[in-house]
Length: 379
Image (cartoon, one colour):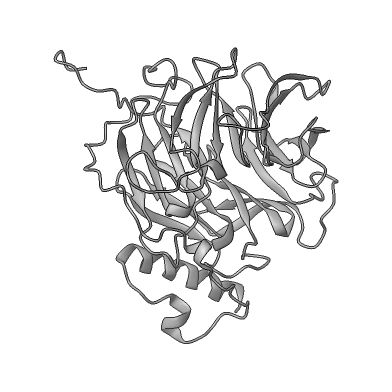
């Protein structure tokens, strides 16, 4: 399929998603894509199209942003968290007191399945979503709970405008979409308005460590406050800081990390990264000296992590929030005591009813809306 035809097909597919139509654009026109679709397994389908069944409250107005967030809830969790509940094929927002206040179930398992990373846009009104084994990216409109944009072809891996295991999803301040296309060994910035790739670091088939010219299975691409991008490479456990213009600032190997997943910066300029391993870990280190300043790794028992995919420093408290993927939970770890002080999801038990998750793979904090319970005084 020519590039222009594929772009028209993708736009048509998005329109079909939004209107609830069943046919995909190439099926409707009868011109099957040349790339071969994968076989969708029962595991990839997960729990199907499910919902918690909770009656959702009205959405509060946006009154905060990342620099000036809404009032904090304090310990153990300062803000509500939107979770990419991967094998439940949904996004779900949970408050610190564990109420479900917002949910986005899959509108179509063909197009939206296996959401594994989620992050708010700068204005808090949209959510960027990546789906590794569905080979596509999405933008979800938070207030209308609708799928507003898709890039990539569901079930069809490929190169060029197609994707092959896209991981990480961020909407940049200029409205562009940032992702790491793992098996194509590249990091992409895509303009959703034109459906064009505007920046490409690395290249399909050139999987080696030479950032930004070549990347060895990148699975994390995180925008920083000054516009730089933090890239994590699986092979070699490399973490690299690259300017938006493509200049390498530094590149270091994460100490003691087997499989780095989605590195972030802490407020004091260190790197925090989850070790997607069993037993899993979380490491905070100085990128200039490679000295580890904090580490969480428990070998057995309730406190052990199994393939955690994401860890971040919490604003306000400085504690650590993590997605403990294969133990079916999102947790908060007290930084001083290294004790789990908050958890959503039942340890080692899958489910989609209130209190349960199924392979939670990503999350972001809702610092934009004040979801605190109202009091008799109005708040």
